[in-house]
Image (cartoon, rainbow, N blue to C red; front, side, top):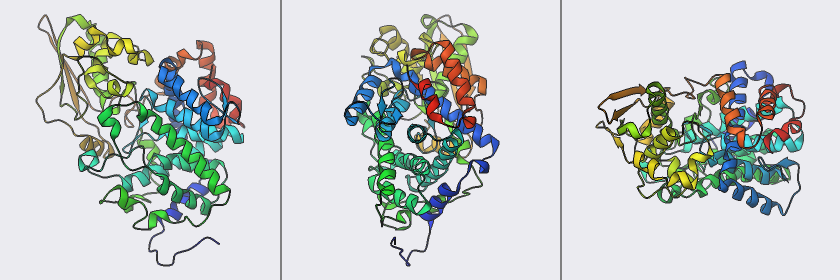
Length: 470
């Protein structure tokens, strides 16, 4: 019998576990099913688009090395190698974040854990599309609430780091448990494992700009599958971790918000409050890039016509300019000056934005050097997340001053893909077709898209795995 502590006054862990266990496809509103499919397709596209960067090849080869060669019931995206569930989740989780093109919540990038794990386990277990969608929704609802309860409300400014790839582990654990048919008691145990295997909320990548950051999403996805298997095979006495005051949250922040663990659970669908990125760049870079695209399309601007670009208000930690070139994908993806410049030079987004040639291209760097901060007080990341949580988003104005004296300006807050300005099916479909160009020809990409939009009617999702590799 599992150990029960009669001294506990809360039951957050068991409540979340029972919610995940009990959730059925029939419980899901139509708009929640639709959003889950949007996220699924968007994540597939973001991962397939990464075929154009060498770091993705390295991630795939690393996953094969973990696996000891080919073999297993799940598939590495792009490459098609058969791998174990955990190793496929590692590869595909890393690919999902590689171009920083997946989703973003108030708490990080749930899709880079949820989708690769849900797909790997569903594929290997030959689960239906309805099973897949239900597991995705359960994961979003549980992950987001745990993350909101334990992330430091002061963000990176608190000096405790920013643990978006720390609590990511819960986005990986829940779909693995759901699709491996663990019961509520076992899911409770798995959440306990997650608190022990959650990394400290470090932000080393913000200092070094290393692409190891993208691998962190893959590691959490791998751990989520491994944890679910460990519990399924009988590990016990790890229950109620979220209810013990010293077990988890206190190590993340002195300002735990435990009311978030079960806030509006089953009533408010937090998956609906997830942002899907329109461009392959950090979430706080999206609006400036969108504005640059709007202005250059509207006025048919050429890079050589531009004297200066002003972003007002600027965003903290995102205005860095590297005059000698950008040293990693992450370095460029987190830079408003670079992303705006490369988007003006190359309006069609893709992995080639982050080729070594483009990241050191003198013409792109020259224009990036003309991107300056406006006079308003900068938006902090913490304040920006709070705006998103409240249903808004930072209002930005981008002004282009041309060499012939024109002053052209546009403002925007909720760019396409914001949860309150979500891309349409057609827009998401066009993005997927563009993202998958390096892997599929147009005919296969269109067939893949049709199959994924109809995934809830698929009795065995493993039949669709061929759409995720060459």
